[in-house]
Length: 131
Image (tube, rainbow, N blue to C red):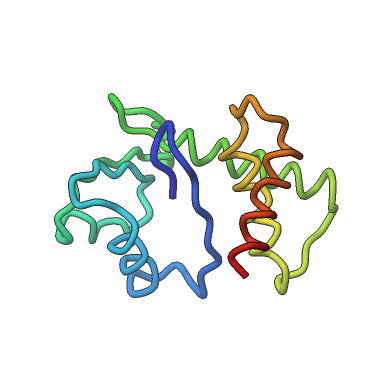
């Protein structure tokens, strides 16, 4: 999930069924949000949950309808998959969430003025103090 111009969060899920995905949406997306998705059938539940929902039909080669598009999230997945292929070559399902956390961190800090390594160290110190 990503809010345009804001932070991204990735999470491994057991499956992509509505009873798995919709509680995650309900816990993380404000009811006032406009939700833009592709045409995956699970997302049809969003309006019944009270969300304003617009769809872009990739099957019909439609990628933007007004403000509705999924390009931001698809751009992240492209960076993530290419990064994993280029750096790690393959990943284990056991550690997949860790890899996604790394690429989410990189994406969320891509515009920081502070060099990424120093941002990482600063975050590591905060975690160490909290633990």
